[in-house]
Image 1 (cartoon, rainbow, N blue to C red):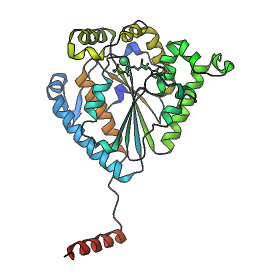
Image 2: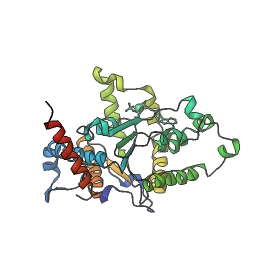
Image 3: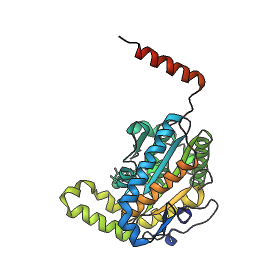
Image 4: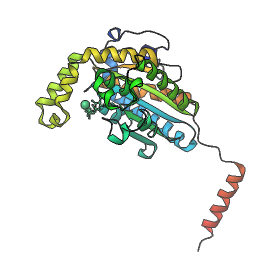
Length: 299
Ligand code: ATP
Ligand code: MG
């Protein structure tokens, strides 16, 4: 399966309006190409298969304890971050997975440089780390709401720096390069939901009592700033999709498709690492033999 239609090529300048939230491409699995209808029909079966493979890769990742994988999820509200994370990671051993959701920063967090709280949460070697929102909020929500920058207690000459966003893009790129150079791979997913679909999902949250808790009035306020967010996102993709940490724009109007593509990309990334269980040395084999003898000789 090739995921080229979803990746933002480094150095390209993309327009979000050219990315259709309902886009579906043929899907190839085990050499068999599936069209749209067939794909939808078989999607939960394929996802199940993918999740099992993911679990297998992840247990090798854990045993090897060399690489880590950070998956960053960004999206507008109701795009399906939570449910994508839940489905894609459903088969993975909880010991090898860490999920962090980033909300408004606390007073303690605001007392540090803006990357501090994220740097503390990067995955250990052998783990898959999920960022449900991330340091990208620092160039998204903070950009759309300039008053948030005022709360960041930056020295005033830094706050007034007109190039602050470009500077942050640069810092983020360097931060990610540093992680990758240390064996922590990075995948970044933007779940691209349309404004119409978001409204549909909000209405559902309002109408169904069991979904009421998911709704927050501030979601509707943020929706009114949709165009500002899209501009900020576009700028993010055009500055921070790099060879070492690419952005993927995932169609998000159909949840089953979102899950399939995200699982596929994570799967392919781990597969490309050529992970193997660590080899047992002659010396270790000998001590395993001795341990076995000791157990067998127990009264
Ligand atoms: P959901 O709505 O699906 O439960 P969510 O990720 O939207 O999940 P919320 O608690 O609704 O979670 O919102 C978190 C809010 O925190 C978002 O509006 C986000 O923009 C905001 N936020 C995250 N990081 C920062 C930041 N660094 N500065 C200011 N606001 C932030
Ligand atoms: Mg929310």
